[in-house]
Length: 260
Ligand SMILES: C[S@@+](CC[C@H](N)C(=O)[O-])C[C@H]1O[C@@H](n2cnc3c(N)ncnc32)[C@H](O)[C@@H]1O
Image 1 (cartoon, protein in one colour):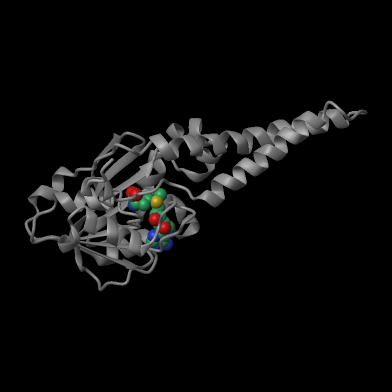
Image 2 (image 1 turned 90 degrees about the vertical axis):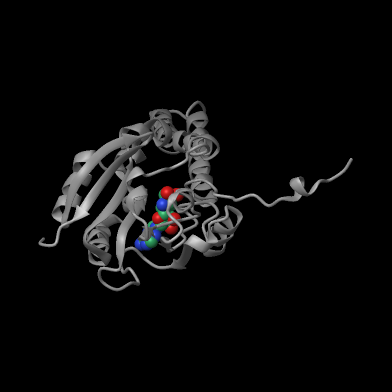
């Protein structure tokens, strides 16, 4: 048997959305639910009903999402190749990807942009959000995908973007806002600050209802409706120029207004 250099070639690794700790916690709480459910058969005097209800609730709340997340980590995002047609018209663009993660979407965009353009990615690299999230990971992925010369990546928060005002022609923000809790408006305003006047924001978020089969009730808590995102964009100084859907995402192309 011979080992060819092809076999030894390192491949990019993008991981999956949500880390081991989250999946493990859900499996453990789901297992506790199962124990409650079974124990219900061995207790008496209405305690059986309490055990069954507690067991079923824990199973629905945690075991279902645990299996859903386990399933999606292998299948849901595997073959996605992002391409944004509006980027083609920029010859020398400064592009910022906020919350670039391991580069699953930033790197295909870097492949698409012209040679004179630069894609900068910032992230806090939360490993509860992506299983292999780190600055080193995305830099290695960019190198393995042949886009190191068109990209730079750094640590930075979308709520306090480490760049001057009006530094970018385009900002992309893909599947990040739902993680920001009450800081969403601050993040939108930061994006507006670093965009040039009339600069473009490409924004995508997971569709609320399409995530229910995977993570149950958590989808309704974690993800917002399309109308919600439209309102957030408008209230934070953006004009929506295009909107649509792609797979499990709502998509918006918005322009920064000069007067808010
Ligand atoms: C679901 S992942 C999406 C990553 C990437 N945009 C993609 O499409 O693959 C969400 C990302 O947002 C990042 N994130 C969360 N809060 C952030 C913040 N305040 N500033 C920058 N990135 C943040 C997480 O670390 C994670 O990498």
